[in-house]
Image (cartoon, rainbow, N blue to C red; front, side, top):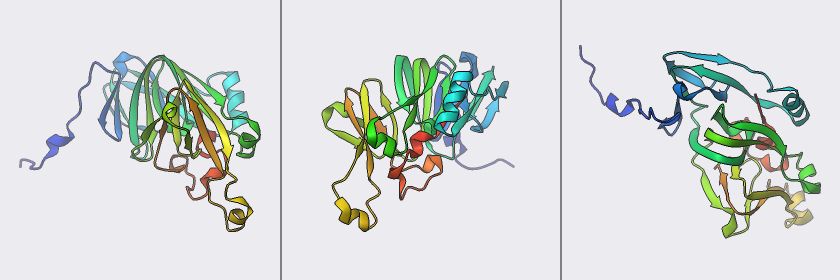
Amino acid sequence: MPIHGDLGQFNEVDGAEYQFTLQNSKLLKVDLSHGPVEAKAGSMVGYQGEATFENKGSGGVGKMLKKAATGEGVEMMEVKGAGEVFLADQAHDILVLYMENDTISVSGTNVLAFSASINWDIKAVGGGIAGAMAGGLFNVTLSGTGWVAVTTDGTPVLLDVASAPTFADPQAAVLWSAGVKMSVRKDTTGGVRSMVRGGTGETFQMAFSGQGFVLIQPSEGQLGGQSGGNSSGGGGLLSNLLDT
């Protein structure tokens, strides 16, 4: 018997000329004929053709030591072959970027995949006493030319840092561009009375300046498996780092 229904709305999106093609807001197709990629371990939900998946470890002694010093990481896998691989992460929204000899700073837990041509490293962000009190903040720097896919817990907003003083919860900031500087700000405006009453949950904030943008998700740490209710008191989302 024929099958009736509007299944046509779920047809695969072609995009053969691109390495990364969104099928919808939560599903990414990677065309491996353009070369191998690094992808979050366990993010494959399907593939067609030929594909292999390999855990490459920590990416060298230096990165292994950084991972040990900075905390737990997001495990990555190398994906290569001649097929098409479909990636997703807990039905979170996916944003695709193409970088041309550029650099972004991104939360490790928000990294879904990137071209093998992209270089990565773990960097400390935000210094001073406030940064230390916040538990230390670390981010993943992605640089070079190629495709990058990041996940967000909900539809994000892109803020122009140069247009006004810009601040974000440490666990809501997903990524920012190369021309942006970040520092950690300790909010004491509520005073002792506010702290006695349980605080606001907004003690530590990320302050952005310079030229460029910052991407903020409408969630405080859900991607990192953390509670959003008291998320601003530590490294949170940014301290869960990329491990390749």
